Amino acid sequence: MIVALSQSSRLESIWQLLMVSIIFVVVLGMAYYTTKLISKLQRKQSFNDNIEVIETFKITTNKYIQIVRTGNKYLVIAVAKDTITMLSELDKEQLNFKSEAVEQKESFSEIFSKIKELKLKK
Image (cartoon, rainbow, N blue to C red; front, side):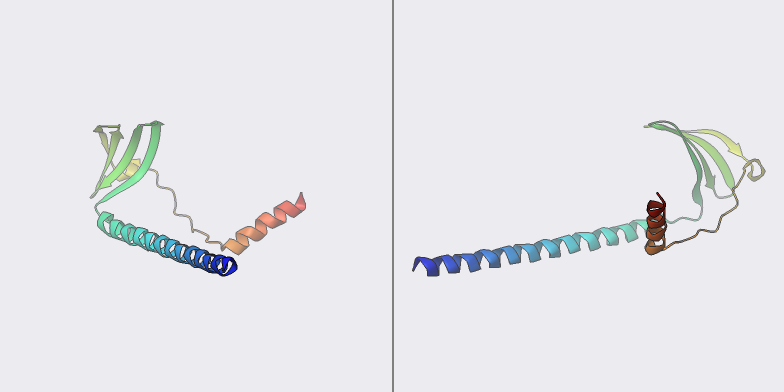
């Protein structure tokens, strides 16, 4: 009788562990897809053709100087913790735009093989 009770208890424990693991994976998956959905919604809301941050320069931990394009105007603003101050307005000719480099998108396997080669050379 004790052996039968022990066997039943083990099966019940394994069953509980399995169910908790399945519930954990389901909750984890739901959290992942919810985060992706919220990210997509925020990107759609923040997409705007009239306002764009061109460049940001960090002065201290809470202070930045930014060049912002609003419509056809370029503004230099100072951004602090609680305030934003317009410093000046620039013409497009006064700005130095970097030529847009073609992005090379490497696959993970290519990057991994390069690292592997570097390790083997050492």
